[in-house]
Image (tube, rainbow, N blue to C red; front, side):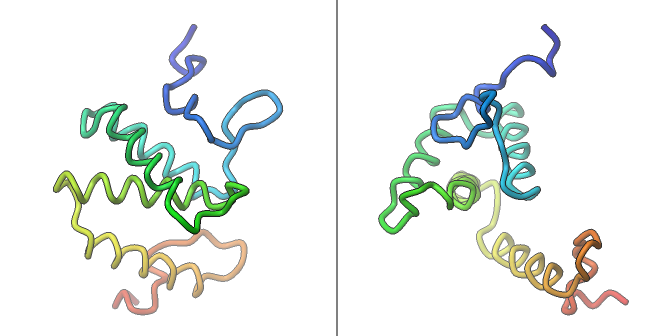
Length: 126
């Protein structure tokens, strides 16, 4: 079995939305990217599987989360952010600033055009 055919432990995460064939599905490209980033950071040893599972579980079970799981990848990003900030790997203010910049860039980007941070009207780039 090739590396591409092997299923990651993350691909087997309970609650992960799946296709009829059992493969992970992503509602938006950013969700797939968040998944890939998480897998990469785990494989680089920045956090253990148990730490990740605990962080995601805590986020998914917070009061007010969508009963239908429609906010699963929002939980995923919050869990990853909290884990990285808690371990001192990332700065909460920097992450929030990037989130806001990406949102502004998305709102300023015409439909069908790739969203890039340079499209943030507040980026100061021409």
